[in-house]
Image 1 (tube, one colour):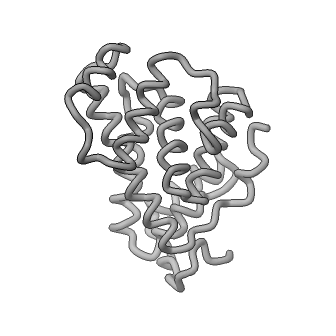
Image 2 (cartoon, rainbow, N blue to C red; image 1 turned 120 degrees about the horizontal axis):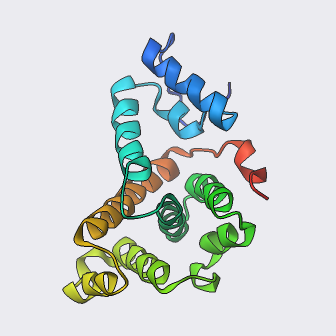
Length: 187
């Protein structure tokens, strides 16, 4: 296995049984173990913290759909120019939407996509929080309420935005490479 980042951080070997089971599940379901998981596997506590937060924000029940959360991930990652996350989450948008053009638009210019009012408001909020979080006003939250988001949904949205701003910076700073398999998915 090649290094998933530019850093020389060998993964724990052998992996703990629970971690190995998680990696095996990824291999079975995705056909690969995402490099982001491989990158964190040098420190199982860090890996568990990362996967715990990711799984909660992206997979747990929410008023935000899985597709909406993935769209937010791609828009944030595009603004931050995070190669790993643009590729990986762009593939997820393509797969979840069944629309390769939507995945490409999220990476290149989300405003070019055919979006409903809810999606447009969410992605505009994601852009503002990513570029200038201190400038968010009550009017920004109200705009989300006006398109049907609850206050819980707004909290979930802010959490997804914050998580990807953090993970983008780690991925970019460590030179994390996307798995080659992502490039051809859902095309």
